[in-house]
Length: 199
Length: 228
Length: 212
Image: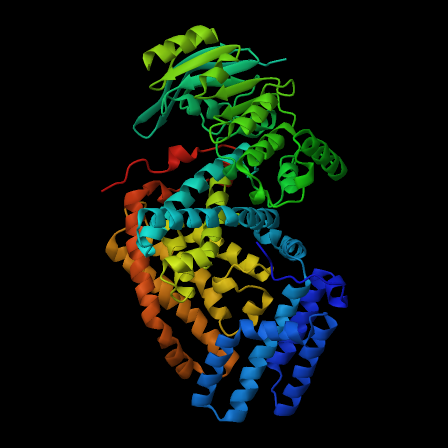
């Protein structure tokens, strides 16, 4: 599975995942909570653009992220315009876009494996209330392993339908997919236990 | 040296269905073949050796260990290879998946890395160490599964139709590994009678019962005759 | 994952496999099977099915796993979305609602181990898969967009027809799966901590015959 990570050597890439999450988290909070005027919003835009430049993503990288959320932004903007005057609508819509772009910087500059490690470390203190961080980490790894297998099932079913001239619909597609998937789950569960998974 | 596998009046029920009834046998051979039709109870028999299925009646001992009481301990000495290579891979990359087998066994990190490297070498998977496991071919996946079992240095390997989904070349590779001296004792469930013939003893199951066991050639001849 | 419910190997496998299934339902082959309809349809259908098939706790765990992977930067949400950005946008409440919704669905539909009925499955899917998800989604959306509850509620009504269709499909699929593969609904090795070393075979504990 291709992650959203874009390799690089920028200061953001080199920063440890935990610290980066904290830093960008604070920035995201600041942008979302601060009561904006058009002026302060301009500053926020500058900060986010600077962030993308520092992260080596360039304006094109920024634009790619904007394009990924354009539907959401248009939807939000239109509804804002229906209910509030345009300056307020612009401020809110831009603020929402900035917050998303800002948080996306984490994913663009952090390898999935580093994020998974950070998640496991972040959950470890919760062991006191019974959360098993190691178990969750195993589940995340296991799911990453299994996604291509299930995707393969989906492709096989579509191919088989084509071969038989059946038009795939929710029922003819999802029921076989569910059966394949749950059967596979039983086999996988057995293998997990056989390979020494501890309770 | 092969250890002792002992079944004493063992029975297993799944709901209304008797999967296995009244099996009594003691095995000390190094290569044990298990044959029978689908649903004959041979897979249930194999699963009891690794505590995947526990006896409802009677007693099982695997190298002196009672799987009902010490499931974790029996799994440390007995590795299992399944038919479906996909369902045995747990971690995203080849090396991580092999390393997973050594988790929780008290093996130091540095030794894990060294043993993984060495084991991948043996199975010819070194070049694929960091490859996503799903990019492997079916045969390579099964080699990976066996690699992940042998890295634990098992006393016993149980294989349930390990070659069922493989082409001739990969079948050969898997069999060579299974019959190598690195597998001190092998319980091989198979529909492949040529393969069963290579064992020291063959067990034939039918309708949940151990119908007969003994010399591979004789057992296989009668089995073939029955369904010819 | 908690001291109260300890998941064994069979449970972990089901959780991981279902998380993967929900991810796949947001990918091109699945979308094609739905006639190229809005990708979100298939994926939230998967969320509903997690509740009806896996039950409340394993179902919620599957959705949580999917969301953690999205947070970690994998494009596992419908249409290739993912990353930390998703969790600060106006729809974050719906993602939280997915988890709560699966629990509600599971508690209603799987209250006992009997065959899921049309009536109870429908009630569960509507209360959990629509009402609960909206109950989390709308307040977050209202807060983030600053529009207030009323207008946000109105805007969310746009998605209601799609969600109702999805609910109908989820009910039909749940009942169809019960006929095709009742074992999918089996309780696996959930067991008390005290005997965590014992094993219950998957075969043994899953229902072998559907009860009428």
